[in-house]
Amino acid sequence: MNKTFKNLDRDKQKRIINAALREFTVMGFEQASTNRIVKNAEIGKGMLFYYFTSKKDLYLYLIDYCIKMIESKYFALIDTSERDLIERLKKISNVKMDFMGEHPDSMNFMATILVEGVDQIDDTLKSRIEKLQEKGYDIIYDNLDYSLFRKDIDAEKTFKLIQWAFHGYEEEIKYRLRDQDVTTIDYEPYFDEFFAYLDIMKTAFYTKEGDIK
Amino acid sequence: MNKTFKNLDRDKQKRIINAALREFTVMGFEQASTNRIVKNAEIGKGMLFYYFTSKKDLYLYLIDYCIKMIESKYFALIDTSERDLIERLKKISNVKMDFMGEHPDSMNFMATILVEGVDQIDDTLKSRIEKLQEKGYDIIYDNLDYSLFRKDIDAEKTFKLIQWAFHGYEEEIKYRLRDQDVTTIDYEPYFDEFFAYLDIMKTAFYTKEGDIK
DNA sequence: GTTTAATTCGACCATAGTGGTCTATGTGGA
DNA sequence: TCCACATAGACCACTATGGTCGAATTAAAC
Image 1: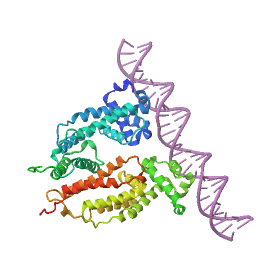
Image 2 (image 1 turned 180 degrees about the horizontal axis):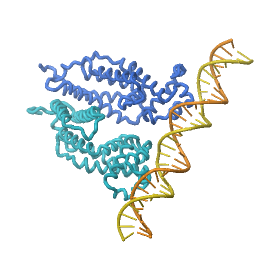
Image 3 (image 1 turned 120 degrees about the vertical axis):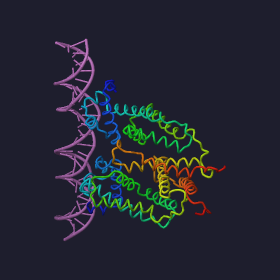
Image 4 (image 1 turned 60 degrees about the horizontal axis):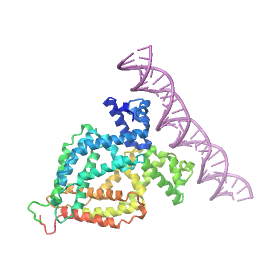
């Protein structure tokens, strides 16, 4: 990546980054077209290869960009002091929603990278991505209070059930809002609906007040 | 589609169908290559366009083929006489596993059709697909016994939670077995693990024996 | 055994798109 | 008037595309 790119006005920079992120997300590395990227970014073809030495160089830059973005704007905002699993997942959902609102392309791009293993990546980058995944795991599981769960069911498995519910609801909302503009959506009513699910799970999975042992 | 295709030995027919299903599933309609299809099916290029008038003709044939397949080998085997949601989902999982073992390409292909709306489809085909989705919905929800659920939580929402758990576990298993040969997998231990999850949900969501009201 | 018909193949076609280069033309400061 | 940087897009060799076509092979009919 050429230093000129760093000195660009933020607008042009963002246009290029977002156009490229979207292209790679939708098409994958091989099928992604630099022609479409420059057209959507509204720059000349020559410029892309002035800023970046090759398609691959651009791709690797984007991965690095997204890793930094997720570390600073997503993971950094989640604290693990909340020891109630459901309450913590609730907070994570909030941060995630905010992040998705502001950087949807970065998140979607990284999602495709994580599910499809990509050949273009070298070992150091690969290990950075692994670290990122581990960190994502810790943020959910670290320092949880197992004693909240009823004693007659397995806590580990109940964890899973709760997580699947979070994921399921997320997907359900994505499906319901499938072709609406992300920036204009009011998520408030969905949070209320979601909290009802959380209450059910607390009623079903957590120790009732007054219960002993 | 040419009638000659119907008269082909089953082996060649299957080779062509499966090669095409896989190509369209992985690449989508536009990016799918007829060259790769004929190479993987081990037939000459000319033959594909002898059996089918065009790429689109092949594509539409495959959709029709899969709809019929799913209706006769999947939906037909599920009965809705079991009124306990969890037990019914258990049976559905069994049929689904069997089907996935024998016709994985058909199922994956239809899945991509259902999530990505495809332009190539005309109205009559579109409505057949909608019917299929409705049928899939009925198979889960028809004739269920709501009285099994505890009275202090919302039954509809609990349905959702249970479904999300089924889906979550399915995905988890797919992930764990991600690069193993589908035909050689022994699913038995996973069923045991899965039943443990179902027991938890019954304990948590269903009315306890002896409970009144 | 000869003629006719149904199958099979892959070289070939025009076309479109690829990643990347290069030249010509700004642009802004000294 | 320089000069260095920045910009655009025509252009390149190359690859892959969906689809065609004539020649070869096989099967059937007489």
